[in-house]
Image (tube, rainbow, N blue to C red; front, side, top):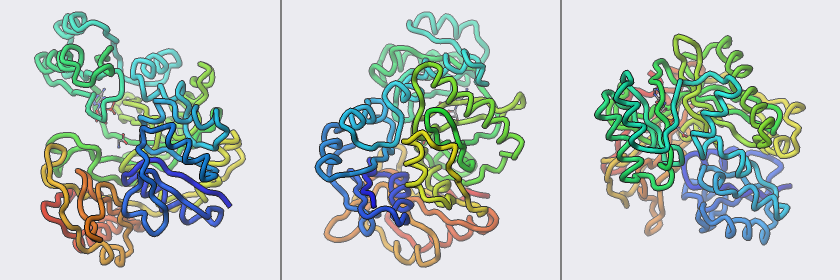
Length: 418
Ligand code: AMP
Ligand code: GLY
């Protein structure tokens, strides 16, 4: 039997805890800091995701066998190296490999060197050079801060003034601090977006079923970008032929490239793709599970996640059978009014049990317990996931569950899976 620690507190982490709790090989799950949705299946411990030493101390003192990490920041900061140095079992890329998300300059240069299809780009270290380049370029253009920026470091500029304003905000006003030391100016790509997560053991990549995020706050992809307002799996535009091309020319090639660079990638490789007319191209890599994508992908996984995690750590993925449910999954995110801008918290949430009685799964993200009641505590509050034979069935089931849930100011998209 194993003891597992899941680091993080969002819908993604609740999904991982929910899946791990189904494993007959697990006798204890901890989550740091976790959330109230996990209370019947995990013990939440109040350690922040950035406190790497505190997390490793906890794992050591409590004989945790396996640690899974949700968010990117501790991975990029080297949590895997710290755990491995102490002989603790952990699932994820080391600091060097996490650069694939931590530095967009690193990942773009890697793609160029290994002929992994991606948009054309230039790297700039000086704001004036970037502005000179914008003056002679066609628009739209995409301006990206090199480093982590909590999902806000990518600006799609429709005209040159917008592009220059983005450069100034990142490189001069330092909107993202050191993450703006360098920027990338990239060709604007068009097409449907697809996310492919893959299990990687340093040598072999095994893609999971595809998914699609819905980043904008309002229906019909209107309004500002968010952390993700819903997801579906599989991604509608993703054919079996495309999936073969992506596996061979993008995902496995990336894992080979990382090994060749002396940065073998272990854990979850997230590949964000644009299906352009000229073929699939990489928009971005992440070194972790996506959110909300995990909330639709992991409920479709039949295989015990612990078996896969152990195989990844041992470098034995090639001998591991991974099976998926044929069903379709839809996840609708319920957010606080005002998100992704300012919003209020502390609103009591009603109908959670009723929603689950309809056969959906309610994953918590921004919730807290106050006077024994569950209240809102963040922008994205809940993710309601349903499985169904066809996307239409999953969609209907998810929205039926949502109709049972109420909190003041709740906002959700009505068009997920449509
Ligand atoms: P990233 O953080 O790099 O995934 O970018 C966030 C979002 O910006 C992506 O999901 C896309 O919707 C969009 N994006 C990023 N790069 C490009 C590009 N080259 N062309 C068009 N849209 C892009
Ligand atoms: N859904 C986007 C992300 O996880 O980065």
